[in-house]
Length: 319
Length: 278
Image (cartoon, rainbow over all chains, first blue to last red; front, side, top):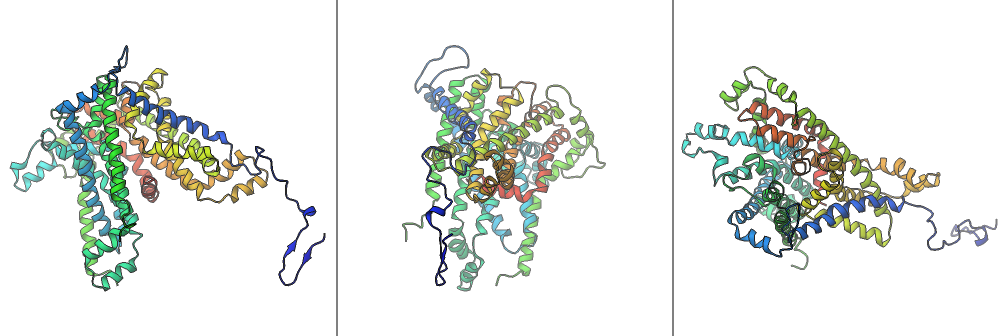
């Protein structure tokens, strides 16, 4: 083999005739290294299109009909939506949905962030604390709601505590109270979800270099100043994730309401999710139920997009 | 300069106090479930039982009939296991070809999956229910498994695809050079290397399916096949203030998850923090 080896560069040249590379492949021939078969993706594509796209589009179409599951149906345009926005009970459900979503996002984020900040640095037992606080997140929302149902009942621990503190006048049947029942649901949700938000913030806080915080402290920044100018900019992506996921989850709260109040008293704790269930599946009004689901879907999409826009990184383009 | 000082110790004690106070509901849950019928009604919620009484658990676990708790546990296990198996199998092969190929169709498929993750599921529930009812897939475990695979596949494909993108192709190349077929290379070499992704998919999907109430209520409503949350809902609805029994059901529904959580809590937490933010 005529191999030339030059001492100066140590390069090896192989003449074309001696090379063992395959000829350039024609288009369409089998590639040398094949990563699976293309049809492996087919079952997944079919299921995703069927369960997500076709179902959602069909649901969107149902929203404009008066179908009841059997027999004839008519295309009735916007009639379902007029009915929704003229019915005080359903409008109340829209407000309850928004109230639960926003109040739960605000509370879980405040508590979750405070807790994450409290255990983030130097606590010896921070891993076990994290494990304990995250535990409610993995439990079934329905099961958690029953625990709180016990706490909120009239001769339950909450009223017991109020009585012990001498605040008997505050005792009430929490879950049958038109004003307070929704707060009871809110507390149940916040108790369960705070650990989830905390974990997102802990992941974000891990990216804040301790040196920067120390430098800021040496330069005379107080706790608030360090939080405001060092921590917050670093955890901005975490804030975006925690609030967006929280809004989306909060808008679809269902299990807790069914377990705690069933939507009562007198519809005071109905949300769009419970109304969708009641109209479509208890009353068989598939058309009207779909219209409610469409309203909920639009609200979810609007807030998810808005949230992304508000919390995205604004340092780009700004001073 | 940040050192463990007396102030830090104070903070640690304070955090423990807050955490334990926060977990008080779980303490109440456990002590109440261990009380006798009489004691559950008369004693204070935070008082421990005078003698540990497993009567409530025995009664719950020996229920029979349509909403039998043991049967519903079996159904929940079948549905959860079936859904996880399908999600791992279909999700991993689909994500593999999507991630490894650079054609237009694979990019389009990836976006199809991404949009499906964002798309809220509520609107599709009614048509899915009608479709499933038409072909006889409501009220049985098979229909429920298929439904869950469909609902959670986007999440599974997305998680696997991001793992595959971060993995070099050298292992597959080595396998193929040694004479493995694409199927062998995937199932014998690639998938075993993907066990962190498989773990994340299994934990997230398992939690969602096991804890789900809404979909089970709709798609299994009124049938012989009930999952644990629905059976719990019906069972509790028939009990008035028998809190020791209610809490026994609640604890039984929590135990499998808590056992997994104890063994793999790091995985759970990372899976949630990393997986759901996608």
